[in-house]
Image (tube, rainbow, N blue to C red; front, side, top):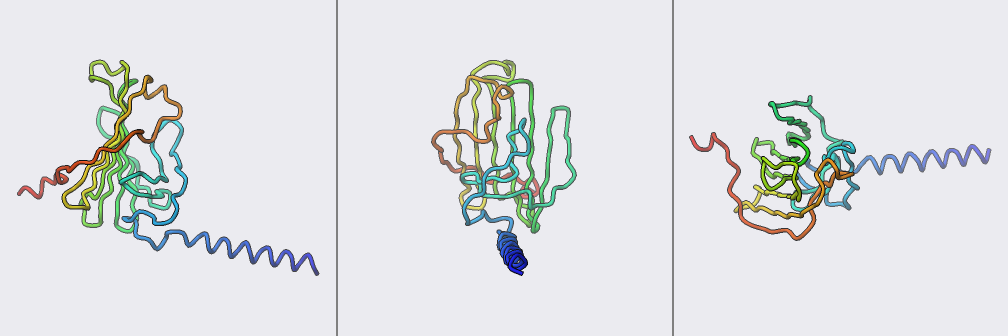
Length: 194
């Protein structure tokens, strides 16, 4: 009898914990960063800088694992992978491109339900010139543009490394150093120029 009571109490506690943990941020709009403590970053895989759960400074906190992943798109002659996540009429495009040993580009683009880009975050690993793409040093640049404020703002930081991006294990998901803030141009929409 006592063991049945203990099992019942255990199951009741487990169910309560499950129900409380499932509440999470489900009621929070997808376009808003989480107000709660940041979840730990989660990588897509070990060979990429893509995070599917993150808290990027100036960009926000998102858990793309809770979003719907649309079919993956490969574009162009250069390796460009585009993954599109959607939730609550909001869209997050994650674009990744690698060129040779020294050039790597990653962009997160958050688009609102009105089809307008709200924020972008770029991470790049570049060398002094395209013709010397396998020469050191490599510059890691992280740039966030926020189009939700007027005037739009840009936040950027850079660091140098003495390794090509393919030699960095794991691949950094952000630059280090002090942010430089500036005003940026509004996002370009060709249809706005008609």
